[in-house]
Image 1 (cartoon, rainbow, N blue to C red):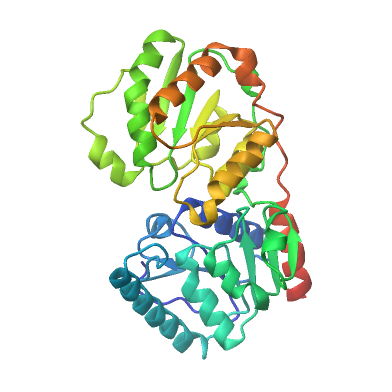
Image 2: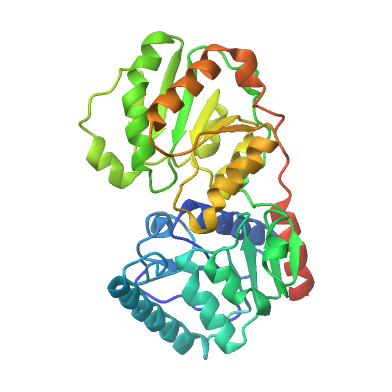
Length: 362
């Protein structure tokens, strides 16, 4: 975290974090806003524990990281502690923003966005929201009625936010995904399977892949695996034996390049990842997080499946065996694999959001 609190007066504040699914759409919107309004200050507000705590200090973005954590799904004692931290963070922001008032706050969800959005609502600072998932989170439901606009990643969100001023735009992707991608059917051996458990990793997926990777790679010598395990999981798994063609890393900074070089992807089903898969034109096996709020990852995965872009494998008993059977078929049969790799879908979500913002800013 930067030592000094940024000067917020007249700034565009971007807030969203905890996971990459909330943080990366905020980055995409910030990149678009910087290109359009190069003279306006853009500042991120997030949490000290989320992905933003790893990404922002290494970036050029001015930022403020606050001591907050998730409240939903915790024990009563931990929830009370989290609620106290949230109240304190909101109080701190309000104390600053009464004298250095941002022009507008843009929130993309996650517990890291809660202090800024609640402070903006309390002080009457205009704010916009983006909800990527098919089912809005608790924070978005709470603050949506007073938002200038709620940008929706999926049509289903509208009916779940009655009274909110909604617009369907899709899910923003970073600049790196706003380009042409090589078609998957043009790749040559060694073919790559990309495994992505989310920005924080996924223990169940990691264990299942480690169980089956050696057998798959022995049976399919033209394949290799690139596996993003997550920083904490990498520490746990670094000494586990792996096949020579199974590379494991804590985090991939250039996800666009990793997807482009891959013939197939195994991933969680966060809305941001789904949007990036569409932009890259890559087919996937999606393993939705069973504990995601309002089961939104399963809904995202089913929507991708309905479009013919993914096969869905539920995380339950026998995950490794079902994942292995599905992978064997797709890795061994190019026609089946390529049927999931549709043409890359041009993403216009940032443009749609900035149109609204421009009409507000004047």
